[in-house]
Image (cartoon, rainbow, N blue to C red; front, top):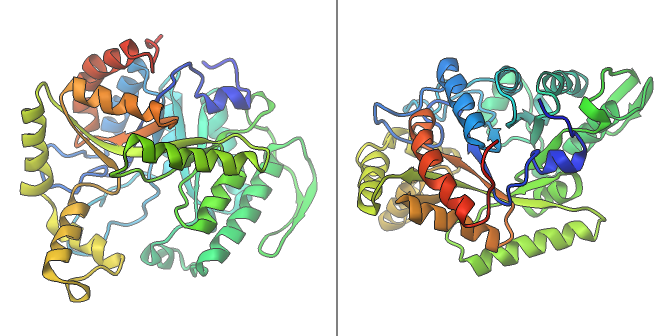
Length: 376
């Protein structure tokens, strides 16, 4: 189990890899591939456990789940099966030795006293390897399931600020304290045990709006941002701006991105499979449901523009497409370090089936490029 649980070690995910690599959305069926291929990810507990053990042995740095409570829309079945993320993380932490496992928590749906205790429990199970991905939520249909009214955009982050302040207080040496805010009114709060090692779990966020970005920079250790279509130079500018803004507040911030990987022995094999899975076998009903939730419909734009948006959505849920041979994928990943990015959370069509090849072929190449060290 992990021995050094300082915040610095937690932020480094307890290793010396310059490029952190995580697996994204494996708690959801189909992961982030909106496809109907029969080999698509099941998200069953058995498959998640197999995936986590493979990742742990290979030296993958972290597992990052998506907080999803219902599938997109009523027509397709994309992400129809989802595992709740704190309990998912706890089970995987109990079954692994080195990997950091995040829970993704909707602040408006979780009482902070309960959440703080759940997360500390997970942290103790994992010996200091639990991480928090804090989100404010956007899907109205999910909030309606809980009977919770979604706040206007900026107020969501005002509530989340109180929520994370209260949770950090519960993780601190404070005891028997009151918390009085605009939204939260907590009396005589006691929360023990504290997180492992007297520090707190690493916190990440992916707010894209100016308010969301400011919240992440103010409160989090890791900030996920979208770098699709950017050159290394453009990525570097984004990273520089985020880090600079954090330093004006006396904080250090790591910047991450997301990606979708199809890796095969040759470039043609990878491109052929990607085309088959993502276009020929796309779950177009779910694609249309996702677009409709975001108010993107055929009556709002020209047929040509809608077709482009539809095809872009089918490629994935916002990650940088990484399609190619091991050399190609390794080169693209190593370039992230040149841009100053700390890491990437990636998805596969089938995590457990594709991870062994990625670990055997791509990770050694990244070691030779000097951005990762061999797994212990």
